[in-house]
Length: 159
Image 1 (tube, rainbow, N blue to C red):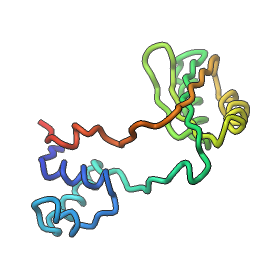
Image 2: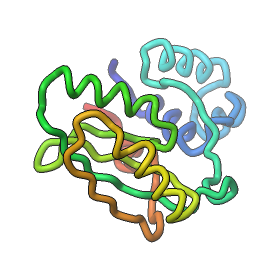
Image 3: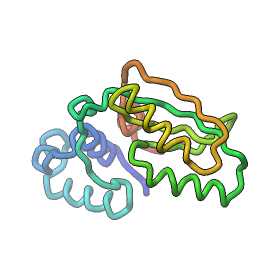
Image 4: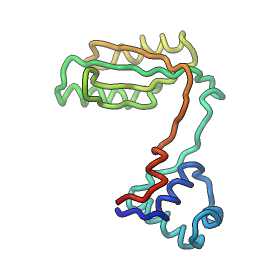
């Protein structure tokens, strides 16, 4: 789908605040609320907008620890990768999982309350994942920036 500058402006505004009404968007973007509603519907139908969610404070829920976990598997077989990914999907503490190129097979983002909670997650969830030969954990000291899309993408139209 070709996105123009107006579509990108809508996406930028909604990525900052998904609760903006069409009227509020029309005050920022030179389109009527009706035109904005049509564009949003098209963006949703085409899969550009996949959904909406609230940003929840991890600290308010007591999830003060973010851990990046690098995982190596016994092999790269399709069967093992599928088993691992199915197990990850069921792992309640894992909030992100990426299949990687390079030395590690996967990188996970895990949320925990504290070191004791992470130890439990490591023992009960991560070490039981199929095919794991190595787990390396790195603890995030502070989140500096987190966005769903890069700033530069939202400030220029696609070619």
